[in-house]
Length: 380
Image (tube, rainbow, N blue to C red; front, side, top):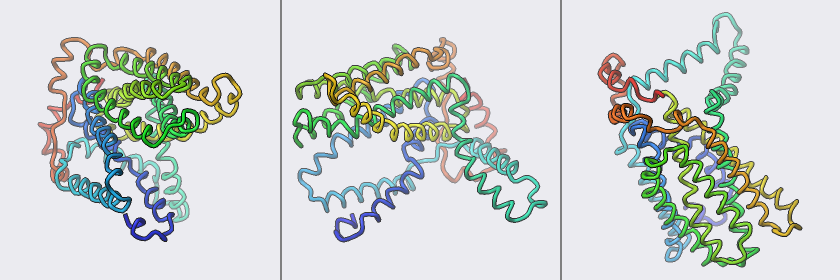
């Protein structure tokens, strides 16, 4: 908003502030909070419902640009973001149980102590060197959860393929359509409106019954197969109608992300919910950088082929087919939250209650009932 009021302001002020938003990904924190309170079998549709709200905003946002100036649009965005900040501080309850928070603190303290053992016998420069080493090694240690076993490696591979293709589509598709199919601003707005509406329907209406019918494993495989189809349609399209149909299909591909997040959440301990979501988003951030570069390279070496620049989207469809194979390789007993009838019945009570923030300062000894109630949470 400020840069709209002061047009001569150096844009690096904006970019510098925007960089800080990447330090903590609010979506990862939100997904972790939802996983704290949702039963395992409702996590995928629950996360999908959260993303449906995001897609609703995504589809409505372009409408504001029609009747608001740039200054008023920036002011509206600022007010809405600030209102969300106030709601988070004063209304949103704490979801992390006190005993889980205490266990996480204990683990961090133990790791830090091991890293700085015998601090009384080493020099100050050596302690500084150890602290720097700790800051460098800790992110790698946190990401190591993705390499815990073959199952986690397969899930990480799915997230990486998904991040590569989705980021490539987001960054390159509009430019490709404007250059190859003469898309106008109206066509682009229509495309985003279709993405928003269909995405909201997919996440809020389709995901839950589909998840209950075929399970998370096949939901992911189906979503990636649809992704292969719609990306191939991008590459071979010769008219705008084909693109609009492909965009409508692509909304169903988006059901894969909340499902993958739920699968990972169902296979880690309660104290590792934040860690797994953060690691998953870090991997997707890496994929978001690799994806567009890879697709542009494919386009440059195949520009003289019959498909021309559209070959990069056909290649992206091939990546999705690889992801389909990886999804089908997931063990059903680990990927699906619905197992046998007895586990489903027991799972009805498998959730975390909401906690007020003030309750986190209470001792773990005062939460024995909570520990017993949630002792099975996060187990596989």
